[in-house]
Length: 210
Image 1: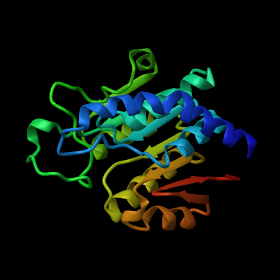
Image 2: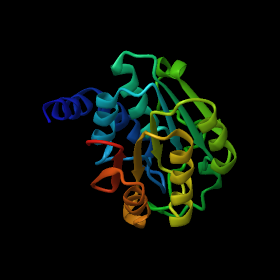
Image 3: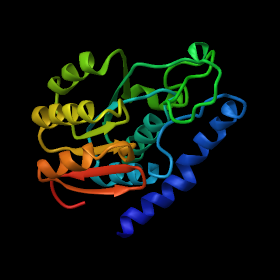
């Protein structure tokens, strides 16, 4: 547990302030920055502990979660890479009404994942398009050590996606955001006899000890 506490403290001191600085761009927007918040230290610490070589992520938007993942890979001082899949939503297409629960929107003049600093981008591959079209190719193109899901929240789509990953890559670290929407992640983890736990609005599952 000492290592977990160490990495959580590391996240709070060295990683989170950058995202806090980026929040100023959203002070007068009718939407929020998006990405995991309370649960972010757990994801960061898990990646520091498990030391994955290849991470695949669904859901990017402004790049909050991507930045946290890439920060962990950089701190691990290995050759770890992140592949992220996203179908972004831009401010120019927003209705103008406030909606904190409709997913993250990207401010005008910004690109997908703009929060991620340039020095992390040499280990980051961003794929723009539908998850159902792009994810299979990423799963079959090589080993995946960690899978981070912040995509569509429908029960059936979540379960289908996690089944696809498990059937393709086998043992893996699984992280799912927004689990409060439905029990798909917990039921899926039980059905696959994984060890899992929840942290706020996120779930973490592995084949072994957490």
